[in-house]
Image (cartoon, rainbow, N blue to C red):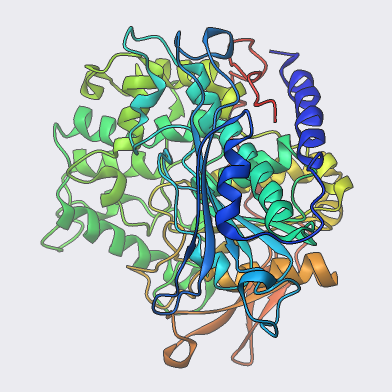
Length: 554
C-alpha cells in the first residue's frame, strides 16, 4: 500500500506529540500514589503500583503495571466489543522521597536514563525489568497486547485475521511501552529523562528496528540483537527444512546424524581463516556439501544416506525460487546446530504462522506442503504481512537526523534466525544511507562467529561469546560520549577470568586477522561475500493488503 508509510508517519507525529504532553509535576511522588493517578486516565483500564522489596542481588524498586486500552472495535481491526489490552510493566528505581540521600543517582537510585526492554517470540507476557532497575535505569516490558506465546492470537473464531491484535504485536504495543515509560518517569521523579535506550534480541531486535524505522525520535540508542525483522519471509522459511525432510526422507533425520554432519562441516571449514580453533570464522565462505558425508565417502557411524544429504544441503541453502536459481530466503549456516528448527519436532512459531496467519486454519497440517507448494505459502505470507510486520525498511534517515545510534549483533551459528537476513538488511541500509562511511556514523553491525541465537557457543566452544551487557555499554558510550565502537572484546566463557580465548569482535565488514599471534581487526572497504546474502525482493512491499494504519492515539 503506497500510502502506508505516509499514513504511519502522520500518526507517528501525533503520537510523539502526545508523549511530549505530560503534565508538569513539581516534585517526586510516592510509588503507591501513582495507581490512583493512572486509573483516572481514560486510556488506562487497570493499574497497580507498589514498591518491590530487595531480594538477593535485586535492589528495591517501584513496580507499576498498567493496561492500555486506546483502541477498540472493528474500525481498528478488533472483533465487535473487543478493545485493545496492552499490558506494560515499568520498573522505577526508588526516587529521593523513598530512598535515603546519597544513593548515587540524579534522583534517588535513578541514573536519569530509560532502558526499554524487548520481547521474544510472539511475546504474550510482560518480562522481568530488574536487569535495568538494578543498574539504575527505568526499565519496561510489554506483552504487546495479547496473552500467551502462541501465534493463535492473530486468528478470530470465524477464521478471519484480527488485525487489531496483529498491529498491537507488530508496533502499537512497543510504542505504548515507550510512551508510558516516559510518562511514568515524569510522574514519579518530577523530571524528564536524560537519555532513552532500547535493548532487545530476537523479537526484541525486530522491535528495535521497528522503532528506528517508524518512531525515529523516541530513542537515543538502540541495541538490537539477532533481529526478527523480515518476519514475513524468515518465519515461513523456518519451516522449510522440515518440509524438505518430509518430502525427501519421509521423516526427520535423527539427532545423531544432524549433529555428526554439522561437526563434519565445522571440521571442513575451520581452517578457512588459517586458525585451527574449531570455529567457522566466516560461515558464508563455507561451501561444504553434506554429500561428502554420505556413507561410503564417510566412515562415520552416523553418516548420511544420499536422500538425507540432499535434504541437509537444502536446509543450508534455504528456500530457492523453484526453477529460477534465485534465493527466496536463506538457510541455516554450516556449523549451526540443526536440531532446533529441523529436529524431531518442528518449531512452533513457524507452524503457528502457517496455521493461524497464512492459511487461517487451526487444523492446517504443514506436512501437506511440498518444496514446490511452499512457494505459495511464502508468497501469501509476504503479501499479507509485509506491510504490517516486515520491518525491513532500509531508510533510517529520520533516525540518523534525530541523532540516534544503533548497534546490531547476530550470531553466525544462530539456530533460529538466519544470519544472512541481517547482512542483507544492513547492506540495503548502507546503500540507502549513501555508503558504508555514512551508515557507520550511526548504525554498526557486529557478527559473532560460532554464536547461537542471542548467544551461546554450544558446538563451537572456542567462539567468543555475545555479551549484551558489554554491547550495551558500548552503545551508551557512543551515544553519550561520541565514541563509536570499532570492536568489542569478547571471551569464550561467561566469566572472563576462566576464558581460554579472548578476541575482538570486529564491526562489519572488517576482518579479524592474526599478527604475530595477536588478534586485531583489519579495516575493509567492502564485504567480500556480499553476493551470498542477496534474495528476491519482498513481493508484499506496498501491495495494499497489509494493515499498517491502526496506531494507538496516545
